[in-house]
Image 1 (cartoon, one colour):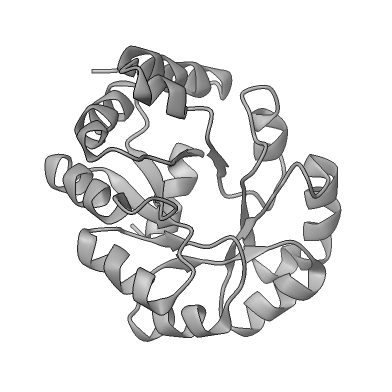
Image 2 (cartoon, rainbow, N blue to C red):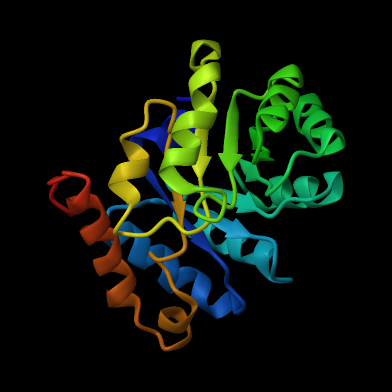
Length: 215
């Protein structure tokens, strides 16, 4: 199954800013226990590559991607670390071309109609809408995506998505999934509150009407 279709199945992609490699394994365990075997580990931290490596080796069934991928070099590092996909906050044609040449799933960020058209021209049909709430949230994305629905383009809004508004985003026809930082908050990871992370996953799934039992 194509990796972005896997994200669509899970609907919520926990966006992880992690500063300590020691947190990688308990984080992965918490996400798995909560029924969300997916993550976007952001390259805002120097340990991001090692975190991805630890998570994917411990749980090869997880879909782990790399976020904040701003260069071709970072994309190659993410790939070598075991990432299944990469995401960026903006649209850099050089990075898009580099990912395409390697057949690596890459989701650039967009904020305007011109961005969307630039992405489509480069062959990108899955785009990150960022920063979603600051740009106008659900109403903005609904209006922005409407002229492009016939192209098959899909969006992953990220930035300000919370448990309170996630269902509104997911109700939009063009939304593939959402990216959310509320699932695994920095303060919970720093305090070792892994049960809280798992509970956030369960609550998020319940909020989407997913009643699948967790084994």
